[in-house]
Amino acid sequence: MSLLNWTDDLPENWEVKPLRTVAHYVISNVDKVTHEYEHPVRLCNYADVYHSEFITLDLDFMRATASEAEIEKFGVRVDDVLITKDSESWDDIGVPALVRQTSDDLVCGYHLALIRAFPDKVMGAFLFRCLQANPVRVQLELTANGVTRFGIPKSGIGSLRLPVPPLPQQHAIATYLDSELAWLDALVVAKEQVLSLLAEKRQALIARAVTTGLNPDAPFRNSDVPWLGKIPAHWTTERARWLFEERDERSDTGDEELLTVSHLTGVTPRSEKDVNMFEAATTEGYKRCATGDLVVNTLWAWMGAMGVAPVDGIVSPAYNVYVPGTLLDSSYIDALVRLPVFAQEVTRHSKGVWSSRLRLYPEGLFAVVLPVPPLEEQHAIVDYVASSSGQLDELRKVTERSISLLKERRASLIATAVTGQIEMEHTA
Image 1 (tube, rainbow, N blue to C red):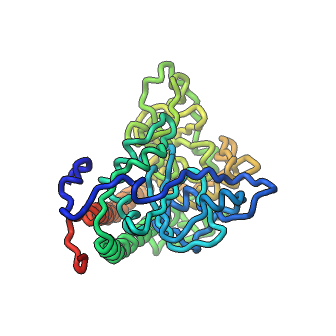
Image 2: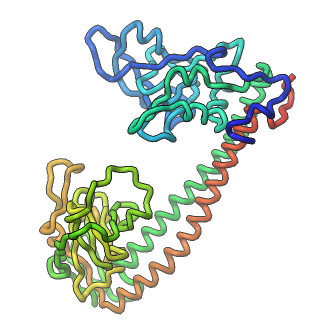
Image 3: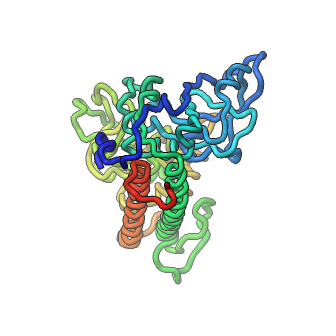
């Protein structure tokens, strides 16, 4: 079924109608600014709609105020459909949510549109599923305009073409999708729980190997380092000051491979990432780093944004680059510094008033005490981590692929159902 030619295959007793003929729709301008003459309300906002298919009173709505006229115009009723009207991302507009529970003080907030079906024309539950279907929703995306922020014009909502079967068939389709999608969604949740367990197991495996070694029968001693606890008796500990040297070499041209640092992926080439953030006009003067150097995102180190460079390149001048000494295997350091417990430790040595403004400067990193296993043991730990975490990573990829397939099946099921490609029982 084509995204643009979906009307060709509709059943004979179905119609295609613009939304304006089957529903009332308004663009909300109720914001969170409070005025004395207004009444307290709960504001259903962009995040509530984007992250929740169904609006219920279990959601933690924003507290705000609205005038009587705004409450009358934008008050939310059961079976209303709310959609995201504008966003910085093209893919985030036109996302619908169906209102299943409401109250007298619940109001549709800004950056949203409220759509109320005419009950003799279309069911709210069916309209909601139509707006989830890619062949229908793509029409909204095509009408959106903007450069840095994309928005759907009110006329684009009104002219949206909808498949409109007889009401009994709408009811059958909505009921069928509720049942089938609940089953698919339960499978997705179960597989996402598997992903969480795999991530926890991977993290625990790495932490145990990196901080306690591979021999559980080896004698241990107290490291006298709170974040480390007990370590193998033959390991030493040392302040980072004596294990690293800071590198502050600048690029003359900025032509080297640009690297980025995050708490999720460590150090990676920017070219390998889907980055939508602002990019500097020139990278002249950026800091050089060599393969195996430790790179720290100074601003986000408290979140764990650090790691070892996989290739030669350049990084933001706001980052810090450190060259490991001869006592350290760079791959061992990469595993160590990306442990959550290490991020907690460097946070103690960071400077700043607020947690979100903490910065890890060289003197802070140099104050941290690190474990130093013999080099041969570091190599063995790295090999073990690569092998064991590799097996877990394969399981993760398989699980992620199965989740992707379930979500594809979900989207296909919605599209085929609302365009009449699935026969329903008791639809006469």
